[in-house]
Image 1 (cartoon, rainbow over the protein chains, first blue to last red):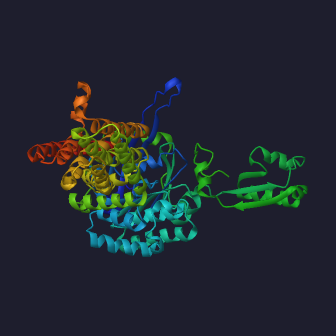
Image 2 (cartoon, rainbow over the protein chains, first blue to last red; image 1 turned 180 degrees about the vertical axis):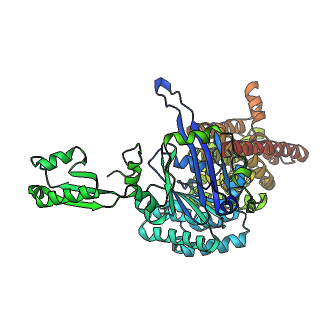
Image 3 (tube, rainbow over the protein chains, first blue to last red; image 1 turned 90 degrees about the horizontal axis):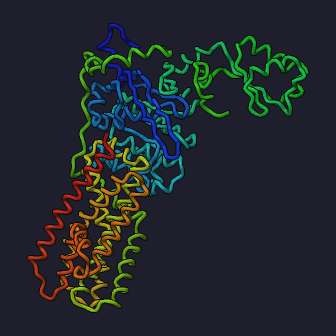
Amino acid sequence: MSKGTDQASAARDTVVRVRGLVKSYPAVRGRRGAATAAVRASDGIDLDVRRGEIFGLLGPNGAGKSTLVRQLTGLLRPDAGAIAMLGHDLVRHPERAARLMGYLGQESIALDELTVALAAETTGRLRGLDTRTARAERDAVLEELGLTGIAARAIKRLSGGQRRLACFAATLVGERPVLVLDEPTTGMDPVARRAVWAAVDRRRAEHGATVVLVTHNVIEAETVLDRVAVMDGGRVIACDTPAGLKALVADEVRLDLVWRDEPPLQVAEIAALRESATVSGRRWTLRLPQARARAVVAEVTGGPAFAALDDFTLATPSLEDVYLALGGRQKGLVKA
Amino acid sequence: MTVTSAGAETNAVARPVPNTADLWPGGEAAPLAPRARLLPALGAVYRAQLSRAKVARIPLLFVATFQSVGIMILMRGVVDGGSEARSVVAGSSVLVVAFVALNLLAQYFGQLRASGGLDHYATLPVPPAAVVLGAAGAYASFTVPGTVATAAVGCVLFQLPLANLWVLAAVIPLAGAALSGLGAALGLLAPRQELATLFGQLGMSAALLLGVLPAANLPEPVDWVRDVLPSTYGVEALARAFDPHPDWLAMAGDLSVCAAVGAVSLAVATWAYRRAACR
């Protein structure tokens, strides 16, 4: 955290500052004894997002990512803490959030029965643009994302990925310095994904736009994000560039062994490995220091166990491995 | 790089809420983008909602019209003329407005609230009144063809004069405003989506029974409910239009009460929206 002397210039470069954010959902006393305990969805979150960066929130379901995003966008009042975006206090003035950022939510219910073009144009007009400007920007954005062909179709009648792309188009009409996107590329094919990130990059280059993004997709997180905050149980357990985070577990590699039938437990070395492996059907996943991993690969491929081996993979750690190494309470971000 | 551990954050939670000045030392606040103004935003929402209606709701307009025409055919066998016939035609016509503006709008706002769709509008700088009034206006406008058709069929069925049907130009907007305000309020205030649907249906049934059945024969408590129902005044104004020599002053009186009720109803709906959508 930049507590240094350059606070003024740091303030100019920082777009969003969150300090000590706390939000709890109260316990629900259900009928017939089925109760839900109180949930601390945000448990003292501190974050800084710098100008022009693509900042990611990564974590399993229930980590508190959407709750954090809802507090950033002024939809939810925090119990404690402060949020400042571009110098405005969003806890005291949540309505200003709408004038500073564009938000893409997880559902598209409000836009569902509109055509793609009308959804984009209406959202632009509701952002304060007059009709002519809204129409011009709508045409530009639809062209940019390749949606001109389906501009007259109702969003409800599109496939999941196209629907998401149409909602993303609506988010872009009416320029904003900050974009908050909640799982923007869910269900999209690679062409659409590429269009989304190209559009984001263009805005970053031309207007210095900043993007805060919630994602589940570890692979996309590694390629697209400038910095990522790994969240678990309402807290940020680490915050750095993807490469920086992976350096935390750099001395470990992931080794996957896939057996043809039964693992050859009669071989002593394989039986010894069984305890430290995560077993999922015929796949064993081991996280080992590099030297040890090399030794295991040599044993398995050189020894009697090779006959029973179907496939093996040696991979550098992913953000999921980082999450687990940092003590993530869930078993992982992606079910293997 | 920051890696936090369990104990590190107790400091942050214990200290008092920081000032923006502390969080943003030496920096001025960035300029805010303009808010959408009420009328343009209302126009945008109105157009979007009307387009939604065209995409998905035309069959429902047919249903509403057939329902009313069916009721009039049913009542034709029971009622022969006079003030009762006028009640039936007027009540059935306003019922089309109640079906769409009260029932369907209650369901729409109920569904929007339950599924988180209000977030879309809450994260745009649009005045709450624009969203409610735009949707209410669009739904009320959508009923025009069905209501006019029902009134015309009713006049033919009961041999009433068609000459004064132009009154619908005033009745539909005013009754529409009143009923859609009520529908929006019910949809936004109902704790669950199923209850919103239920209240919408009950409201429409009330408009049906209390609008179509002649007032003279109703028991007193039910008469009070009839006085409170927003559509009643529109129905009475329309019923007066079928007289050979209509009492224009009384009709104007009914329409102004309808307008007043409509204004109150839309204000309540805007309050309900603010309560549901804004933090």
